[in-house]
Image (cartoon, rainbow, N blue to C red; front, side, top):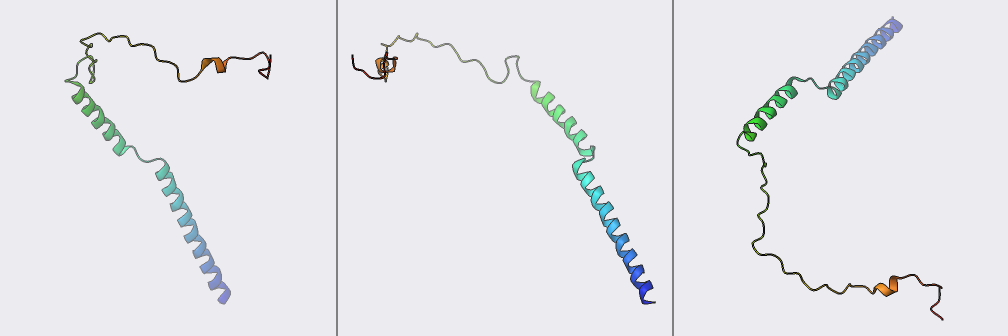
Length: 98
């Protein structure tokens, strides 16, 4: 009689583990592939809001081009470069001895 009860509880435990595994698999599947009930409504609301906000805009968009400067810029004197260009030239030899 003892063996029969152990075998029965083993199969009940195994059935519980199998139910847990199937439930967990379904849970993971729904987390990876959510139902599209909310997303369709969200896309429709976003399209409606975008159409409503674009109704008052001009063809140039939200940012207007900068106005032309009133006075022309005066050319400045060329500045001296911060490095000596002669030091950057290739030399004929590795030493400066001539």
